[in-house]
Image (cartoon, rainbow, N blue to C red; front, side, top):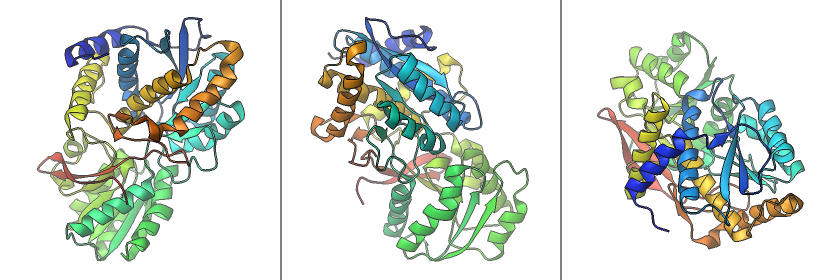
Length: 398
């Protein structure tokens, strides 16, 4: 069923005004339930809180086109606050108390390390829209992620930098030591990627994520400057470090991972961020599909009262996951009947494992899941240039 943009915008507005995302409740006979492990509070909420908007958008699209197998899709929400223990509780509640057929999330790699094994025991699919630690879905049957891991993406970033003739003869690393993925970036991913690329690392310096003053750590880098400084941290500490590097006179290029990607980065760092690079599997201006998604997201985020109205890559990933679940349910002909629930959860999983044969394309492009549960996604290398985020290059393989 074709739906034009105006209709979709109206459907999004209507969905955001209605209680489409509900608190826990047992599945009704006329609906199919998807759990949503959501980060609406806690230290990671600044980027992830808006994930509710694209889920509402996808729900409006799916139900507006007739639902799934004659039933409405319902999304039940649980705020984990980014806490791995709460992500595990959410998985159990969705599977055992609410009759959910699958779960969108959890978001962070730390949550997934705890919740994914729980999903294996419960026999229910979980698909993360944000987890990027390497190996997070390895050797699991019900765990997926609609993301590309940080090592793959950072290797692609370095490959593009070399191809563009950018100075990459030496590197330093600055990273937050008290957050799981930031620490993994600084101590494992970046060193490995630089080694693979033949770029020597002069030094790696850690700092507490909540540190008010990072001048001493930055001074260690600036004392013997390198061509590039790789930042391992979420957006708030990354901005702090970027500004301090420039204040202390660093003239080289700053690069980061998808963890520090933020559509509002240019306005947060100002002129200090000029030339900063990072990889992302979503770029809002890539094509008509991404532009339409960005327009709808902005309208929904504004109506919901969020200060950020530009989509993050986790927003795009969350939208696609719900659409993927709906398609898997259609192909598996799920009914949601209690007596068939366990078998239908397995059928959804099996359909997702065969997704390459669907010929499916979403906001993130033509994608499917590899045997290890990770998605086949591109690296769009994005540069802060002239106060805007601009696409430098895209790599889909390698």
